Length: 190
Image 1 (tube, helix red, strand yellow):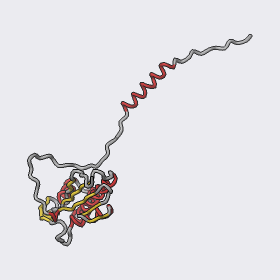
Image 2 (cartoon, helix red, strand yellow):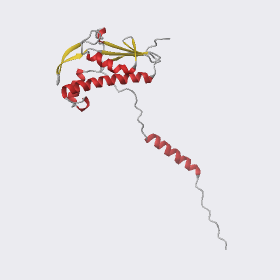
Image 3 (tube, one colour):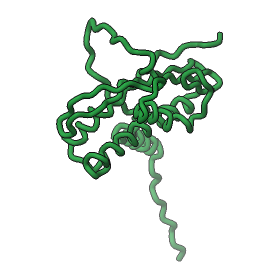
Image 4 (cartoon, one colour):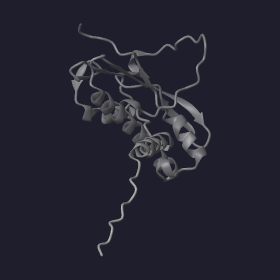
């Protein structure tokens, strides 16, 4: 006797598409993506009706980046790799040269009397500047201030800046503030 072949019921495929769609929506909604990008910079509190301070030209270190990504430091062409060392020299001014920043003596809790630089880094770029060139300059500025703080922290407290307590880090930050003024991008050549 021949056996009868048993047939299995078909799985309805219409509901499979619904289930797949529901799973897709679930994963899209429940998944988080970290898309934070950019430059971390803590800005000061906004204050209304403040007159801009008078800044001596000697205390301004000017960085300009044009649409061809050419860098000018105080009106001289330079390479990105020069920025860190030149910023450090400008801020420290160890020989008190007249073309570098002035210093003022301030009393800083935890450090005592300290000759703090009055120097300000002024950064301006063209609207056509590549983002990569802009970020490279920003990175050099961050490196310069980080190294200045590390050097001071080591000379005063015998440790790198990151290993200091919060109070000591605050004292070092007051001694070496990140003084960067960033102007609105402009078009140098139309």
